[in-house]
Length: 242
Image (cartoon, rainbow, N blue to C red; front, side):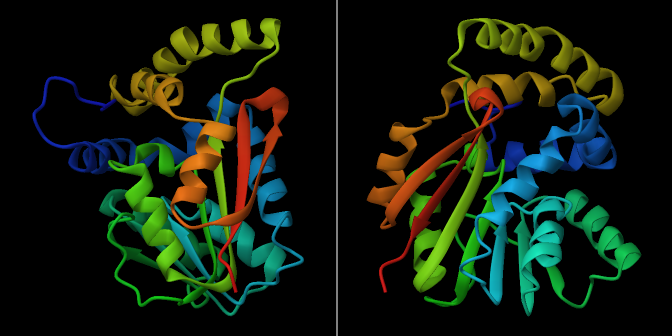
């Protein structure tokens, strides 16, 4: 199992919470900087795939500072978005962000474990997550719980890093990920492990059809994957049977 702090004996869940608490003050800045701002487009593109479903009540898993939740409100105009995250540091910054942009009434950020969701069965029209399922301690368990809280006929949308296949893009991507990204991340966030963990976790994560198999095992049907930007990022969509 890939974890941020290899020298520690704590579980992955505890280490992920600690890592995001550590980097939370610089998280949004580093996202924009390290992706060249393309992460904003990835979220816009992903949320646009939910327009036909018009979900009214949405759960944003591993919400972080709430970027995906904000994009969902802008495009989909839902009645309510609840974001859950295990990092209080990220949630605190997210709550300040919601106040600043006037979305605190429609977006509610709560502390919560993405693999043990404290919601009733069949609660949400859509469950969404960006760059979060890679950090699950137990991927199938987390996806199964997401399926449980999705309403029959509802949609699950997942945005996650993947590995480009084109040889030249692949080489440049891994060169960037193994050298520049950890260095810049370390300098700005002051947490060396966090931005070394990111490329390691991407390498270890199942993608494409491998991920769809786990997605379907968790209960979702009509699944599909949509690669973006040479396959550096992939959007996965699945439905809960009506």
